Image 1: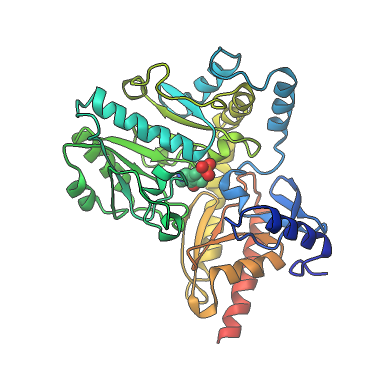
Image 2 (image 1 turned 90 degrees about the horizontal axis):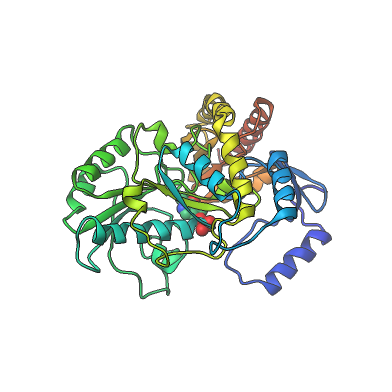
Length: 412
Ligand SMILES: *Cc1c(COP(=O)(O)O)cnc(C)c1O
């Protein structure tokens, strides 16, 4: 049987999920049972190079030995306490994470959406307590094409009609400007603006990399206007782009850094807002919290994640492989591919509509043993685990090239 046919085993699971869960996703017809490093295996024993990595949550790959060991060990001692008490290990996690980011303190949550919500709340409180704005004034500026999460407040910042339809009324106080347009941002900031939130590279929008220097301009402008700069590094952070955080590659220091996804090592949901005391210090007991945020199990895994990143080895691997991946994909420009963007081992590849949609390409890739996901119709996202080696990059490029060539020839 080829990987593109659905086996009875797989069909059973697919039918059950579709029968018993809400249809808020349109999954590929693929039923996975195990993951090992850069690979995942389906119910029929077919192996795929995982270039989706749970939307970069599994950026370290599957079953990372050190994280599994730490998790087992911590589970056998203590998993959950709530923050009503102190628990051993939380301080170590906060210290390790803030050191990686070059900041004073962290606030732990669980998911990316929760951490972004937290950052927006902090910015508004900072607006009242530090900037001296009246209650309810704090305006926040986001970027067109952003993705910050699925809560009511975060979709209030979204311009994606699919994400927002029928969910109003929305949270007020937000406006959007085009990404990568410093003049538009300058015009949008007024005396009541408390924060600008952006992804250093827009992930869900199609791995949109801004011009060199744009983030620096945003930093200078926001500093000048006494406005907080919030970097949503949920997907760009934790080594994915070749540096621990993407802002570090741009030589800037945001006021608040939001991190999640791979912070949980591909095992747990763990998220955080990282900042200095002049901003995070506005929170007082009772003003914000989370039952699961900063639990001992998350802290143990999160600390191990930070230790792995502190060596810089995985980031270096991403940097070394980046040109190989980029050049291999760029070779297809003009013959089925229209554009290639990215950083580290994270690439967006725009497919020429003449040869099909990005989804068509992903289906073909699956038959060749590569799991990848499309976004916005034209872009294929490639996000393999950062432990990937040269051999697997070559395999990925070979499969991608074969798929594009076959479609290019068929369209000719
Ligand atoms: C995935 C993502 C989020 C949301 O994270 P969840 O854990 O799904 O809530 C927020 N921001 C960015 C940039 C993301 O990629």
